Image (cartoon, rainbow over all chains, first blue to last red; front, side):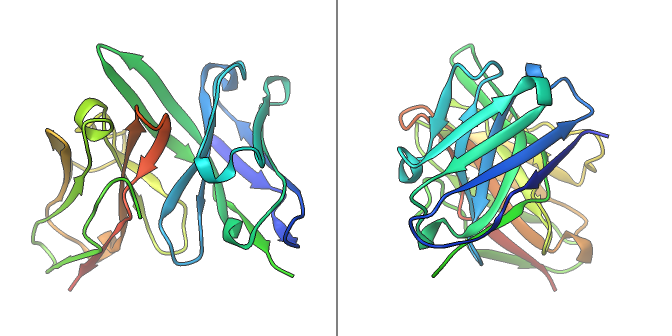
Length: 125
Length: 110
C-alpha cells in the first residue's frame, strides 16, 4: 500500500527551529514530485512547498520563503521540511503528499494523489 | 484570503444533489487543471477529482467535476450522511508559481 508517514512535529518556541520528516513507501519515490501542505487549527488547506524528483527545482509559498527549506533523500525515500524562525502563525498540522506535477499543451497538471496523516507543529511560548 | 473562492457552506437532504463552485482567474483555473479533495472530520484530505473531471480508482461516480473558463464545479449526487465533510478545490497558479487551494466548503447533509 502506498503510504506516507510524517514525524517530527511538536511544541517549539517562537524563533525556534524544527525538522519534519516524511517516510514514503510502496512506490517509486524517485519518479514523483513531493509536497508539503499545512492546515492551521480550524482553517483551510495551505500549500507550503514542492520539490522536484531530483531536488533541482523547489517552490515555496511567500510566507515561508527564506525560513523553510524543503529537501529529499531519494536513497531513504524520505521528504523533509526544515523550518527556522518559526512564528505563531506557522502553528498547523503539516501533511506531506505525493504530487503529480507536469506541464504540457499549455496547461499545468497539478494534484496531490496520496496524503499522509499529518504531524502537528505548535509554535508558542 | 484564498486565491480560489468557494462558498463557505452548502447543504442538502440525503439522496439529493449538491454542487460546490470554485472561482479563480486566468493564471490558475483558466489555464490549468483543477483537482478536488474531500476532508472528513479529523482526517487527512483525500483526492476526489483530478484533471478537472477524472476520478481516481475507488471514487464512486456520484462525484463529478467540470470546468468552464475560470470556474470549476464539484457535483455530488445521491447524497449520503457519510459525505459530510470539507471540500477543497486546488490548482497551480502560473503567475504566482505556487499551489493554491480554495478556502473550503463545508457540506452538511440534513
